[in-house]
Image (cartoon, rainbow, N blue to C red; front, side, top):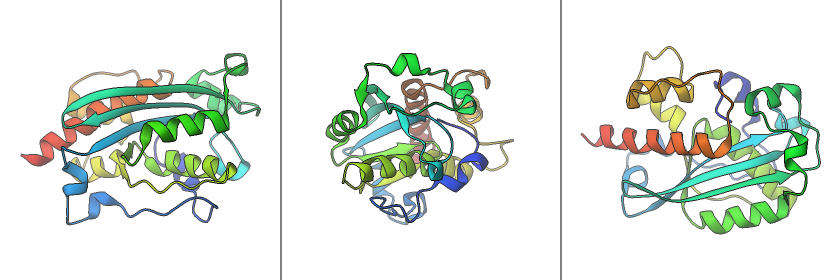
Length: 209
């Protein structure tokens, strides 16, 4: 769910059981973690029942794209029946209804499948504090932790492109990909993960010049 930073800032997951604080790799001097083209990265996005982790909102959709070198190689997608009402504010963002979730995977099954897809890959997300915070919370519910390295394209875009009017996914995409995306569109996890992956690849290319 790629929103501006302000609504998400409170949901970074600090102090949550199962959440492991990871250093901001965009600030590391050793940039091989950012640009190692032999490594596998998983660019992902989640949609949730609401915007507040402290209210025990839940993940209801995960979308992800694996990136190796300059190629997007595999995709992962699942809806999740979290057995929790979806707030009107969240539904306005992603358009997912409770009817769409009926009969879908339960959280434990979906999270296990996602962990298998991710493996030891570095995770990449736009405004990663939100997505990583929710993932950490969900894994803690099933007695697991989340210890993969992660990179935030929102933080990285602020470093590379100072002066943009904002750092929404759509704004960054317009700036570096030259494509116009409706800011009022519905945010679905796999679509946003694909767009973030394209941005991530372009950002790496521009940074290497």
